[in-house]
Length: 117
View 1: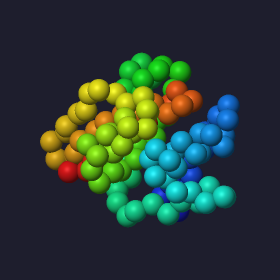
View 2: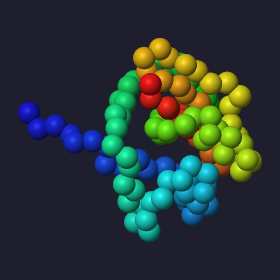
View 3: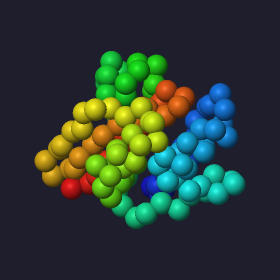
View 4: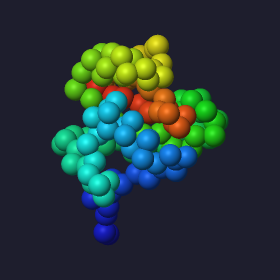
């Protein structure tokens, strides 16, 4: 059976695509080129489904959630707060999995940040 090789892209609607792209670059360091190509670091990617009634994504209107791997969750959350981003106060630790935190982008999308164990 033929299989997918990995995530090939993630596409989002935005009222101001250039501003949203700049936010991801300036706040999260996602340095995509003019074509949107981004060379991510090696590591795991989680593909998981959630119950339709979950509150985990924030708004029930949000059907998917980006999860970015980070090296130092505390440093990333502090960086985001310093830039005025909407950062959730709580973090979560999962034994053997890692630590999680969340930020909401300027378009209202909740984004998860994961420091793997």
